[in-house]
Length: 260
Ligand code: HEC
Image 1: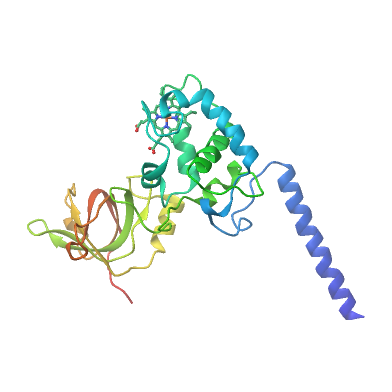
Image 2: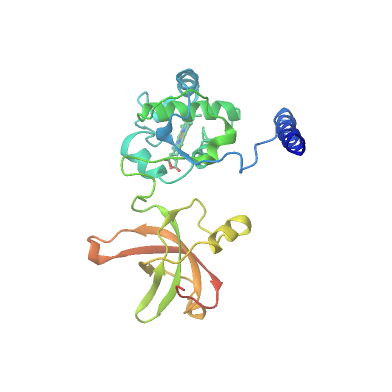
């Protein structure tokens, strides 16, 4: 008997949870991040062919005159091929969405959010990414990452990145980052704050090393600290030459540094 009651309680709970979810959806709220379980990539079929067809119409009406009939660019930048991948690999689609919202330049004819999402799907289609069964919506933009042949972790040269590591070196010999985490793309050159900062503080140190170039003001006070550094990634000419960062910001995360 007791068993049956337990099951009853469990299913009542399930129903309650489903009701809460239904109410949230009805109210037009976004799903909590916990429910958008997995991060996906643009290779996973994140839009439908119909949506890309709508995007094409929007593109032709508002964007084509500058970005070209084949998206290869003109007055505007190319939105296909190597240029597209270099500009966006490693970033999630919300960055592309944000960038598009300032388009066309001048702001005189900006489009509805849905229209930009449709255009994104057309751009993805033209870049050879597969369609799938569900439409892309604004809710999922930050869960879909752009990646090329080599995967999402290959950060292109000259991309703005964020690295966590131990600050070393001197003004005379140059500043360095030791025990550094792998570089991750970012869109903001300023020190992280708020939720982003909390996420950065949880990044473990790694085995990377970077030379830091053009660091102003002098980071002297942070030598030996665990720091977050952002900057443009300059890959070394060879593996032994090592990578550098053309630094945009350095902030101290902790007064000590070292792997456990
Ligand atoms: C009047 C010309 C013009 C029109 C129309 C226009 N763009 Fe642009 N777009 C530009 C220029 C110029 C740039 C490059 C600006 C820069 O790099 O700062 C650009 C850059 C972009 C970028 C950034 C590319 C990158 O990789 O950095 C995106 C994305 C973009 N446009 C999308 C669109 C979309 C979508 C539309 C239509 C809704 C559109 N543009 C309409 C001129 C235009």
